[in-house]
Length: 216
Image (cartoon, rainbow, N blue to C red; front, side):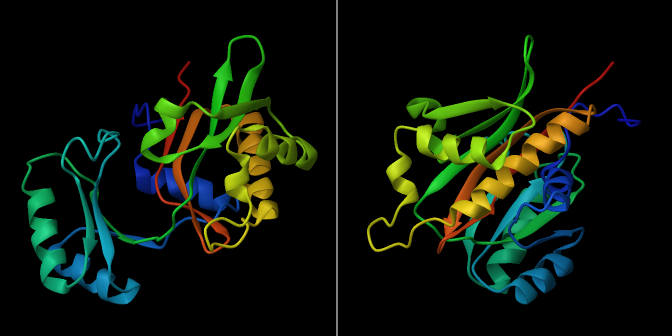
């Protein structure tokens, strides 16, 4: 907030979310092409590269996301393409490529009447089209979180689905209650948008996130 930021970068947003106990994908912030290749080798291929800045909330539309990079050569080329756009970046995120068919959205918003509210629903690119979400006023209990999982229209996606195991509901409950605690205790946080949360095996993993700050 001292820097006058309205939002945090994806990297900083995920650090806050991870500190709250919510699992995020493995990633490193690279400041050179060589670092990007080194981090990709350590994480394991395929990887994703993303330009990182608090001014890059819509990275895909800005051409700052490169998916399914399978070699050091592809990582080096993608790094040059992202940094070559001439934008003021903090660096380039080198992320593990999380695989999964089911995507959800978790979030926090501020209602003028009720204050901070926790959101859960169907995520990914169809979030706005499907609009299958539910809300609770923060903080929330584990029972509240369990009810939220059952309230969305497509809640059957949480069960065993097309050969995939049932989602670890306890992990999602922990994530939702953690978001509620953040919103209730941290006045500096205005909104949290975590989308998508990909189900890898039976575990939810945060792949992208944005924290919006309050300003007096």
